[in-house]
Length: 310
Image 1 (cartoon, rainbow, N blue to C red):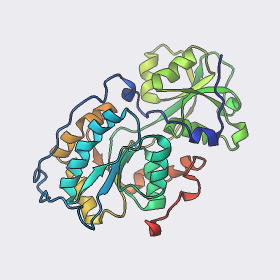
Image 2: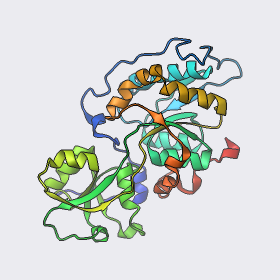
Image 3: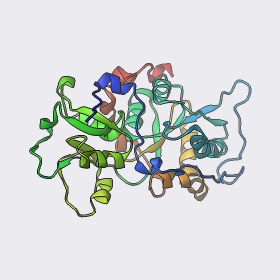
Image 4: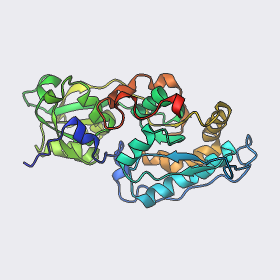
């Protein structure tokens, strides 16, 4: 068995796995979008600024697909946000996870769609406001094969665990339960939730971490695994806006994304994650989750900038 052993610092510099397995399906993001025409939102004149001294606001999201897939996914949403805000919004394709993380911690992004731990971090350190979120909650389980000797999570210290590369939320949730890096499990890096489950079944590892919903799907009543640990219930991914976007404009963007036109332009994004309609988000949903990024490259100690510098 070839096992990839990685430390908390090294894994921070690796490419990250997608949060939802639907993203790994061939062609899952090869789709078109409906873009809202000017005035379709009712509350906006459709006037787009951003020329001259007014810089465009940057909209971005994690690099979870090919560049072509991401461009098809997010550019029409950026156009829709421009009409909602009355200010030019442009989509920035991050290239890779290191670039994405560094730009975030340097306060270069204005509107972001990503996971709950990132949303919480930006709220705490940059003053970003969660606007809308996907409705389904996240709960992860750390599981072993039924009949194995493990009875508690601490026994996985130093043992191989199939997991997506950090800062995948499930993986960080697992690692957060071990106080010392030297006593953490070591990761057999896989890509996607199906690979996590298959790795455990193929005995590439002695445990894995999966969303509860995916685990139920893969098990289909077979009872081949046993749960050692369940995470708290986490909120799903969100779209948030930073302090360069005025509060009144943030309210317009939230209303636009919740409108029929907003639900239409985000349809394929939501379906890629098997999620329903966007619902309103608030800071209480995400409070306290930023700690999961404490040992991750660029995010330790609050990153590169604070709200006063942004």
